Amino acid sequence: MRIITIDKDMRSGCVSILTNMSLKEYKELAQDSFAANGNFEGQRGVITKSAVAVRIRKRMQEDFCRGAIFPQVVLGIQSDSNFCGKLQEGMEYDSKEIFSGCIISIIDGMQRSNIYFKNFEGNEDRKIRVEFWVAENSEKLLYRMLVLNTGQTPWNTRRQIEVIYGNLSRNIENELYCNYPELKDKIDIYGIDDGKYRTQAGRYHKSSIIELYLGFSIRNVKINVTDELAEEYQRFDMMESIDKRDSFDNFICILGMMCKLDLAFSKYCKKSAVQGQFGVGKDVFGSSTANVGFVVASAEYIMGKISVERTEEVVAKKKERYQKQMNSILMELEKNVRVNEDYLSLDILNTRCLGLPKTRIGDEMRLLFKDAFMGMLKYDDIEEVSSLEDFWRE
Image (cartoon, rainbow, N blue to C red; front, side):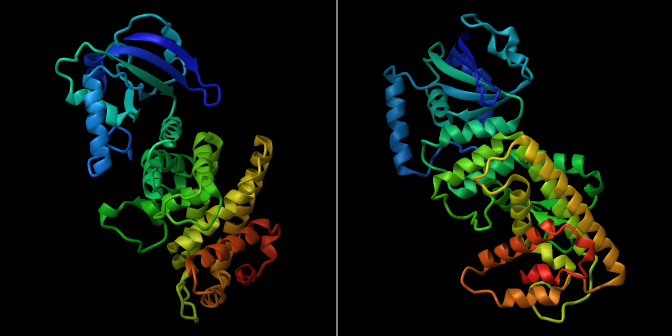
């Protein structure tokens, strides 16, 4: 492997290493990642069901065999910032030795790799271009992947969200329990194959967390995870959110507070006299409408509307006020569960929901909850409120 250039991406702090290596060396380095669909959860594997893709792949194979040069494959490397200090431009290195112990992912080039490996015999010594994108965490690699795919066949929302969640799921759970250790034995985030469903507070489906992350990223309650992203600005809003570590920390803070609020609501067991979706306290956050409404209201409270660019100092102060207010709300919930079993005012909430327009009822309910939770966050003297009735009415 010969290093052509080493460049630092000043925006993200990552390092790009452009190299030239033999196909044999590339296969030894990347074949395990290729077999694991790029070794990056959610990465699009080799496209097999599209007639157009089959024709393109056939043309690529013919071109490669006739000596065509393909653009560089991009391999993601998770390593610390000191990794590149031992490398120099123009020097030859053993790639297996240099990248030993590193997590390697194919973040751009699954289709090209397929052509390389299918035509390996007779081309073992042929030189190809490989770029290594060295990042300290998976979020930076995810950002790079989304950028690389912007000009290609667009991913629909489900694929984008699955990629985002697939690569952040471990980070989300780890960070959630790191920031809120008291939640570790009370929260369960489960997948569709786990055969579980919500029977009590603190239980969330992975798809619900995915929807919350999207709502947080675009700060909009009107989201549909099954539709394609028709408007490009939403795609880039997500990318910018992923690229900012502080933004991810804010999401973890909000998610932790939502879990605490869910557990606090669940202690109210008096049945609502008005028949509706929210019979008892645990039903409120069993609804994605309440979850999304809370997360979007919280994100907007801390970070401002999507077009607002608050400084880090302002965001930090807002976050501190948010945590203080949420702790006050939780204290009031804990206090009133013993003295005022109607504190949640579920009768009023159900009545409001029944009176909403039936067209796009989900969006209407999300907006109701967003406004209600924003009202709670902005009400400084929450202890003087005798119930949540006024907030549901807003």
